[in-house]
Length: 401
Image (cartoon, rainbow, N blue to C red; front, top):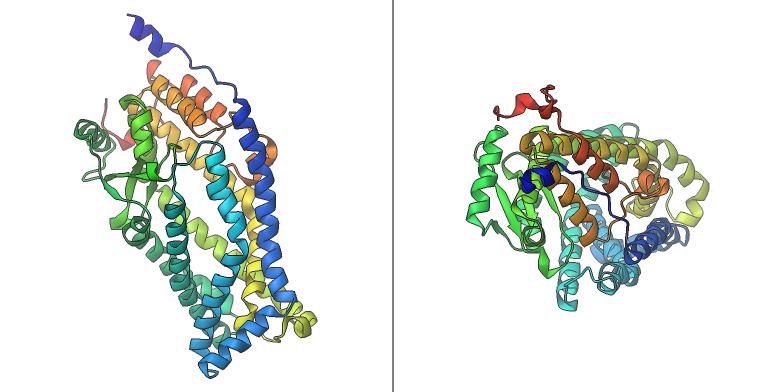
């Protein structure tokens, strides 16, 4: 009787701890710093003429052959900019996370992951640059359109291979060790109409104490991934809601929507570069050290303009993300009908990750990819149409309960 009564009681939204408030305000400052650095580094490289000198060096090393020059230039550019931002990256992702008790990562693991990330960038980015500059030279007026067309299969390929080839470079992925829980998850997925679904456990506890789960991949590589930390800190009903949320992303096609959204952003960004870059090159050619956009020395100019577009469009993109996350919450609630488990899962998410239940407008506009934790807890408390016989929004997606 007491358990039934407890299950119907609303879960209160906890107040943030002083430590969480300091972490939140510090993150806001660092977001501004990161944004400024993201503009400052390529701007200095561009306006100081260093990019042109780097291109000239690459031409000298490669004997002036265009393809090797582009490849060498981009690799060198990635390495140099990574070195320039290394102190800030180290402070943010290692020093600060340890200071707030959120990290288990050793210095060796951090350094190894940083090197791996750099190697992945040094492989992937030069290939993209080759395609970009080939299309720029082939079609100076319509290059942005052809690049946008080429970006869709490239993005799909990245979505397909990243979970299989890239993510395992950094952490160990495998099936759930708790077979009883795995059986419940597979039954839940079957109720949602997903046959042969795949749920992976990743040993993120070597890196972080935070809890999380996500859906990733595309086509055959699509999967739900649970941190081992979330498996340790949440009870089975809470985990089943979290998985139900991720199943919602899966069933409702949110991964595909994310792919298409990123593709649209690429197109908008490249068109903005096309419209703006020509005038900038004409005006500052002497300072830039190049007078054509198809010169590989224009890489930092591309970065500046794309970053500006990204900053301007961020509120719209995040608003769309919050909507999808809210609908995934709805799906998870309708699938599990575990309101209290959902609400307590969000409470633990706030407590374990030093979250803030009600962040400010600035955070919501420029950093809030999910609804606020207070909104999610309150929605979990209040949304239960099945108790009154009202129709479910996503009831047609899963078997009758």
